[in-house]
Length: 207
Image 1 (spheres, one colour):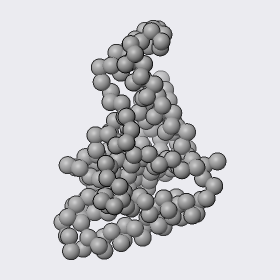
Image 2 (cartoon, rainbow, N blue to C red):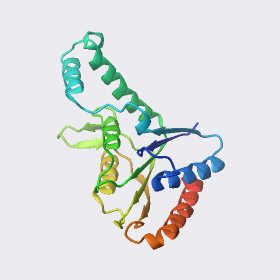
Image 3 (spheres, rainbow, N blue to C red):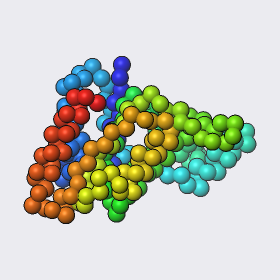
Image 4 (cartoon, one colour):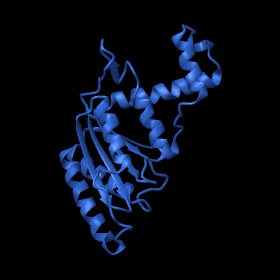
């Protein structure tokens, strides 16, 4: 059975967020076209997303030295378990949608933390005998939905980063949907959103 993982990175719902509104329409269209698929819809602002900090780094170092997991400090165990849980959830999905706003030309911090859980040596990429990395995740489809006040056409740092990092781990079937320019041309915002929603409906039927 196909699993679709929706990863939202905005504290607002579709009532106030343009990127979330477009995502809502996509999910509705996708659900109608794929009624038997499993859809897991998560919002990173409603979850604990572990950052790579001193506790995680020390825990990984200890584990690499042969220390048993149950011998780690309690906080280290909690963070390792949480981090690994996000990794496994990503690996279990066949299709992934990432939806976020463009904030200060970058992705929201929680999305960056989540993306770190998807880039794990030995699980989503490896190094060959010459030390060159190669991706292990070549069986997934991804869609990136992003809203922005200006017009960047996929050349902004956030979009480039997301596409680059998932290409790095092997995802080649990568699509993008942008709703952009609404602050630059507020008089055109309704039409920009209408066009983005139309595209999301189409992608929901074909993704």
